[in-house]
Structure formats: structure tokens, C-alpha cells
Length: 364
Image 1 (cartoon, rainbow, N blue to C red):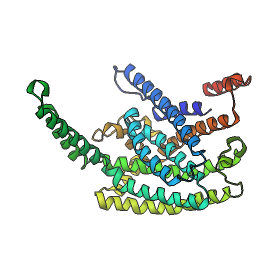
Image 2: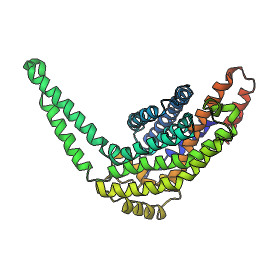
Image 3: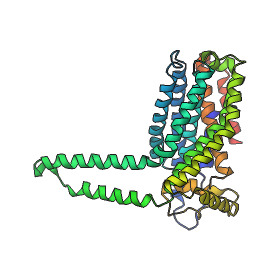
Image 4: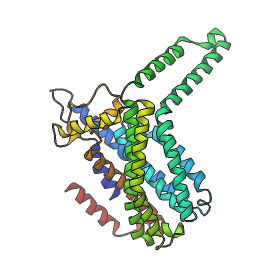
């Protein structure tokens, strides 16, 4: 069912738009089919990777090194985010995938030795979140550009030491570094940094609001998942974890408001004005589903951010992200439950009937 849900959400995230004109009808269909397949496979691979993280959290010494594990997963999230952005090519498609990663990060923090360590691990994660949102995220492109320039300068210096025959053309690297610096200076004055930062923020908010629901699911399927048993959390104590996840929501949102205001002052972004503009565009949309519009893509924005800008961070955007995140998390929990029960799907005589019922439901 999780894979079927992923299939339907990919169709919503990558709709087949009707383009005006007599030519080029086959190319959009082929492109949308490729994007859907790419998103589906990437989501399944992310689900399998998250299963490995959950299984890692079952390690008996994981709670002892919970702080180190949180910091490691934060840096790992930055690396995986770059990989997903390059693989999927659109921030709209990578956002729900990375939201699922952040949600599983929150789940595995419950493997702390006790509730006090769980609270301290939340403080550590929140502190890293401030650094990531205020400095690491906005300055990541600067760091990558600086690293590229240093690497290019090192190669240029090595080529000077080589004979002219072996050194090759030296003008290409210099011109490429100058072009990258020019493009970077232009991007600092455009909307891309704001869009990238707010897309990351929307993923964090969705993970924050969705986390209590996942905790309720784990409580309901306590015997099947055995996560609370492996985390040494009693059923009565689980209520405190759930209560904390609910109580922290308004305070976290209040802290996010201050951070967004600080981002405006620190980087000069006009976040509030942009959100007001998004709200006006969404209320005046030409079609009931914003993603089906073909003439509202802002060509002044980078190609990978046009689709997320088109949805205007509206209720439709959050609904699509929630459905896709829900499917990935269900895939992770389903595999974990089957692993705990040592379930063999190929030896279950009812599996073929279940698959047929799901296929009929998808067709209908």
C-alpha cells in the first residue's frame, strides 16, 4: 500500500500538463513519465536507507552515543540533500523525500537511555538546527564555491609545474572559475537563496507537525513494530514523549518566527513580502489545481525552484508533501514490522490476493 501511495503522489507532484501548440506533444509526456519514475525509485531507495537508520537505532549502545549520532545524521542529511537535489532536479520533488529523512531522525532520538537524555538530545538537535538554518544553509553555496575555486587554483598551480605538453589548456579552468564567481554574485541578489531556505523550513515544520501522529502509530502497533520494546520505553512512559511532541509545537513555531526575522535582517531577504505575494497568486490562480497551470512558471527563477514557487507554499503544497511523506514512513514502518516478525512475503498464500486487491483499488 505504501508503494501504491507513492505511485499516486508522484502523479500529483508531476502532473501531465496540457501544452498549447500543435507540436511537442510527445516530449512533455515522456519527460513527466521519466520524472515520475525517478521520484518513485528515489523515494523507495530513501525508504530502504531509512530502514537501515532505524535498525541502527536498535543497537544497544545507540542511546549512549545519541548526541554523536544526532550530529552525524545532521551532516549526513546535508550530504543526502545535495544528492537528492541533483538526482531529482526540482526542490518540489526532493522536499518530501528529505522531510521523511528528518522525521525518521526525530523517531530514532527516542532511543535515548531515558526521557532526560531525550530532552537533551532535542536541545542538541535544535541548536544544530539554528546553525544550519542561519548559517550553514544560506552559506552552503558560498562554501562549495570557495572549495571549487581552491581546488581549481591547486590544479592550476600543479599544471604550471608540468611541461607545456602535459599541462594542457590553462585558460579553461580560469575562465570557468571566473564564470562561477559571476553567477554566484548574481544569485546573491535573486530569489533563489530565499526559496531554498524557506523550502527547507517548510520540510522542518511538516516534520514537526507530523511527528506526534507517527508516535501514535508506533503506540498502536507496539507489539508489531517492537520499537518501544527495543528502545526500553514503557507504554505508560510513551505518553510523556507524545505530550512533549505536542507541547513543543507552538514554542518551536515561535522560535521559527524569530529565526525567519533574523534571516531577513542577516541576509537582507524579503520573506514576508514574498509570502504575501505567494498568497495573492494562489488566491488568483487560473485553475483549481495550481500545479496544472502552464503559464505561471517564473522564468527568472532557477529551473529547479520554479515548480515549488508555482505552488506558492500553499495548502496544496503541504498536502502533497504530507501524502508523500506518509507513504515513505509507512514503507519504513512496514519493513521494520516484517523484519521483527521474520515475515516471508513469498511464503504467505494471502499475499497474491492482497496484491490483486491493491492493484484493483489503484485502477478504480
